Length: 577
Image (cartoon, rainbow, N blue to C red):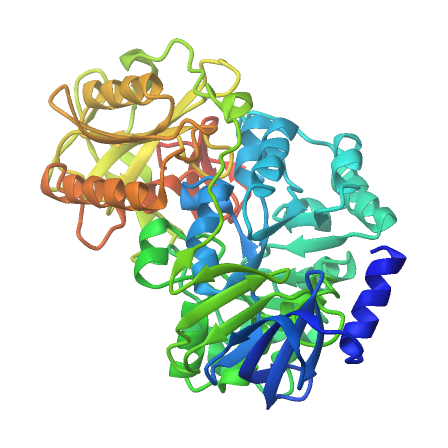
C-alpha cells in the first residue's frame, strides 16, 4: 500500500470523502461480537473502510440481506476435483468462497516444482484467492515410486514464496516420531522461515500425538471421532472439520463443537468434485449442515471465516471491519445460506449464481505428457502363487480405510488367479508411470464388486501411479494401454472396447475442460461401471479405487512396490500363512 492509498483509506473510513463503493441496507455480521448491525459497508481500494452510514461514488442496494465475510476453505486438494485452478474458481466463487488453502500434494508428487509452478500461475487467473501449503511429503512414503522427490534443500525456495503459507499436511508422522533426519530438516526449515506446519495424523493418540503437537503441527483434518477432535483441541491444535466428496466427517464432529472450543474449529472440504459443487455447493453447504445439526449460524460462519483466517495467519481477512480485505458475501438467509452476490477485494465477482470474471486458462504443456509406462504386459500381472490363502484388501463401506483379510482363491495349474463372480475378489495392480522403471505389483481386492471388464486410473493417491482392476489380465492390460493413449485419467473397458473414459491431460490428474463437462462425464463413467462392469451400487467406483494405493491410511494398501500393511508400516506377502 502506498502512502496515497493509505491516506485515501483513512479519509474514506472517517467519512471525509466518498467511498468508491457502498453496499447499502445490509445486516452486517460482526464476527468479533457475534452481533448483526444494520448499515452500509464502505469499500475503497479493495478494502473495507467502515460499516455505518456512508456515501459512495457507486451505491448498491443490499436489499436487507445478511452481509458476511468471504468464506474460506481451510484445506483442499484442487487436483481431487479433477479441475484446473481457474475452473475450480469459476465454480466455487458463486457459492461465497473467496479464499482456499490448497495443498498441491498430488501434482507435486507427479511433476515436482514444475507442478507447483503451474498451480500457482493458474491460480493467478481466477478471482478466487488460492493460497498454498507446500507439500511436505514427496513422496508420501518411501514405499512407492513417485514422479518427484523433495528433500528440505529443495523446499527452501518455494517455502519463501509469498502465497505459500507453510508446509502441507505432514503425513509421515511415524518418521516425525522416530526422529528421522530428513523429516526433522523439513520441520526446522519451516520453523526458521516462520511458516505453518499442517497436520495429517489419523488414529494417532496419547504420547504419540503429544510428540506430533510438540513438533509444531498447527492443525489436523483427519479427525473421525469427537474424541480424536477433543484430544487435538486440548493440545492446542486447530481441528478442520471435513466434508468432502469422499469423506463425510462434519455431522459426526459437530456435537463436539462447544462454546468453549468453537474458535479453534474450521471448515474444509479436502476434496470437492464438480457434481458435488453443482448439486450441494462448497463451504456454503458446510454451513447448512452445521445449522441442520443444531449449531448456531454465527458460530458456523466464524468457523468458515475468522477462525480460518487466524489459523493461517491471514490477518487481512475473515471479518467485515475497517482495513480488512473487501471479501464480502450477501446471503438471502441463515439456514440455506443462499448466496446472492460475492465481492472479492472490492470487485463484484459473482451475482445470482454466475461467475463474472473471464475464464483464462494457463498453458498446461509443462505438466502434460506424464503417463510414462515401460514394458507393461500380461506377464507383469503373473503372480505364480503357491498357496490359495491370500491377503486381500477388503473395502469398508463408505470409507477409504480398508481391512486386512485372508481368503482362499482359486488357482490354475500355474499358480495364477482364476476369477470367480461368486467370490467378489479381483486382482488389482499398481503400475509405475513416472520414471519408466517397469515396476508393477499385484494384490487382491474384496468388496469392489466388478463382474466384467476392467477399470484403470492415473489418479491413485498419493504418488499417482496407475491403478487397475478387472476380471482378467487381458482386460486389465487393455485398460492400462487405453489410459496411456489418452494421456491419463479414467478408462473403463470391456471385451476389447472402451466403454467410457475421461482424459486428464494435466499431470494425469486434472481435466482441461469445464466442471459441467467433468461432472457429466463422471456420471457416464459411474453408470457404465454399474451397468456394464457390475460394480456394487454401494461403492463409488472411481474415488474408492484411487485410494487403494494410499499407504498412510489404514489398514492395508497396494503400491507399485507391493502389498503394504499400514498398521505395521511394512510390506507383507500376498500369500498368507
